[in-house]
Image 1 (cartoon, helix red, strand yellow):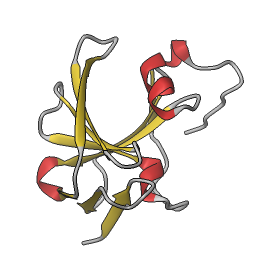
Image 2 (tube, helix red, strand yellow; image 1 turned 180 degrees about the vertical axis):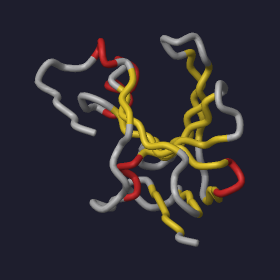
Image 3 (cartoon, one colour; image 1 turned 90 degrees about the horizontal axis):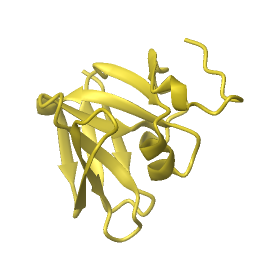
Image 4 (spheres, helix red, strand yellow; image 1 turned 45 degrees about the horizontal axis):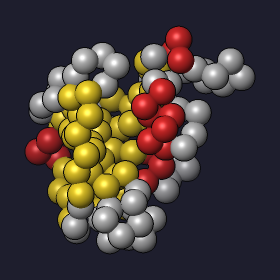
Length: 125
């Protein structure tokens, strides 16, 4: 079984994920745009039992536009968001795809909040 490790910018907070992601998705919501500082966020969802976080983290909980609560885990040193827990999917952990720093990571298979997408963003599945 394959293992992948995602990490914050300074490397202090890491999460090792076993196996293939359950889902990889692009989110165009305004909160993901703010969180990433980009036009969208990309999440890889793994079974909760297939992940192992290491290092210190700080959490931030917010209610998404959908009304569901999400708990974000980020590095207290560099501020990078590495993973989050979507209350709506309690058996899964979402990991920021960019934190894997792997250009061969599996591509997204769906997009959400497309009504918030920048008009110049074109993602093909």
